Each structure stands twice: as C-alpha cells, then as structure tokens.
Amino acid sequence: MAREDDSRQAVPNTPGMRPDSDGVARRRPLRRRHVEETVEIAVPVRTAYNQWTQFKTFPRFSGVVHGVEQVRPTVTAWTIGYGPLRRRFAVEIVEQDPDAYLAWRGLEQRPSHQGEVEFRPTASGGTAVTVRMLLEPRGAARRLTGSSRIAQVTARLVRRELENFKRFIEGLGQEGGAWRGTIRNGRVQHDHPEPPRSRVAQWPVG
Image (cartoon, rainbow, N blue to C red; front, side):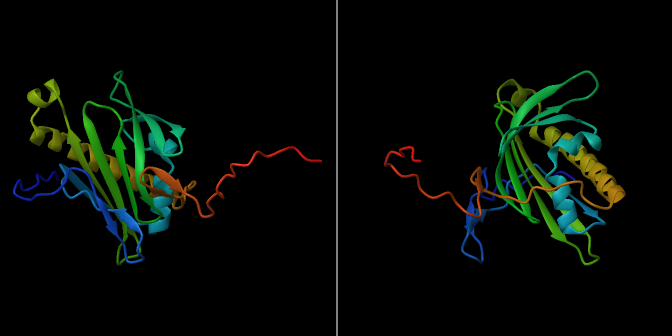
C-alpha cells in the first residue's frame, strides 16, 4: 500500500549517511517515500539477495522490464514498458551491503526517482524483502499528475513485481548467480585496494 509521509516530518529527500556499529558510514534508509511494499519469500536471505543482484534476469519474471545492460560497474541501463511502448533509462547503485541493503537513483531528469531494497531474515528462515521508492515528477508531468495518483500506480506495480520475484526465486529454489561486492557513494569497495601509483617513471628492464 502506498504511504504518504506526514508533511510535518522534516526529513531530507535523499538518504543521508549513518555510522554503523562497526564505525563504517552507511546510507540511512529512505524515510521520505511515496511507496513502501514488502513481501515474504520462502528462501534464505543470501539466496534472495544473490538472485536480486542478477539484474539481467529481471526480464525472466518481470512484467515490465524488457532488458538490462551493464554500462559501468555501478550503472545499468533498463528498458521497461507495456506492449509496444518502451522507455530506456540509466540507474546508478549508490549503496550496497551484501545480504542487507541496496540503494539506487535514476540518472534521468523526468521523472526523477530513487529507491532502496532491504533484505531481512524472518522467524521461519525466509526473507522479508522491502522496496521503498520516491518519485519526483517535474514540469508538466507534475502539474498533470498528482503525487497521490503516482504513488498508487507505483505501489501496485512494485507489489506485483515483488510477487513475481517471489514466485521466480521460490520456483528456482536457489540463486542463478550472485554479485557479493560492496558499494559506497557510487563506488565499488575493493577488499585489497590498489597501492598508490608511483610518480617515478617506470623504465623497462630486462
């Protein structure tokens, strides 16, 4: 169900950074949102998360995603639409924690959007997957379409896609692949960072 935020609640449009228990700064959940939907899936968190990170498989279960291309390590191009209508746009993953959290932002201008997905273990050993989204139409789209209407339509779409993902991964029983990296502020974090490059010219030897 779509949830309109209380206008009295002063929160930023975009998630901020918060220090976690281990001292690492991580993204604060998207508190201001137009849509929040949750589905419980009968597979472990690791399985659900691993399959979700396989973006190119989304057309196998989605009713609106027709193609996903990897542009850069943290940027993908999505083609979505109904029937003959198609729209292509780029999405950047800005934060990602394995088995826990993923946040993205659309790189297109109209409408602007951002979102996040959280993975939490349930008492039964399954996974609760929660998607939150904030859409910000601009220009004529904002004047012609009320935010409540956008929220209702988006909520139905997100719910349907989550149910499709649930049937897909439960049918498989195990993930078809995984990306286990961590992303901070749109940058992939490497376990072993490259040593600083020397400014001294490297002359050929041997």
